[in-house]
Amino acid sequence: MFAGRYDHALDEKGRTMTPKRFRKRLVELGDQSVWITNALDGRDHFEVRPDSSFHAFADKLTDLGNTKRLQDLRRYYVGAAVEIEIDAAGRLLIPAQFRAQLGLTDKIAFLGVDRERFEIWHPDVLDQRFAAVADDSDDFLDLLSEKGV
Image 1 (cartoon, rainbow, N blue to C red):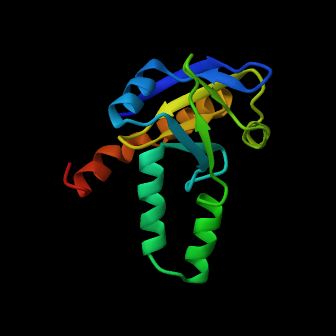
Image 2 (cartoon, rainbow, N blue to C red):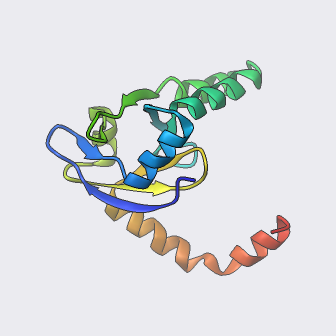
């Protein structure tokens, strides 16, 4: 499971350490690389999937059909994706276009969200998102109850 928040430094070349727990999960999955791409729920962060998960999800998107809207979805998600190798020291090189879009210069936040993916945020933006979610968290129990949890 990719879970938890980890704030890390980002060097001038755009490299950052992958959180140890995330590296452990990648080893469990047998993946040496990850794919970074547009998040499907907003432009304020990016989604990162291990190689095996990315290919499985991309295949599911292909299997959905070929309408114009689905083609646009694949362009946005698969077409924007960049594979990143994790080096021997456990570092990721965040591509320049992704750093520029989020305004990442010297710090980065990793946020684990489920078994198959984690997110990359600017730490300040993630703080703002958490504050907004906390203000609107009263209905979480109702939501879980509706879903049978």
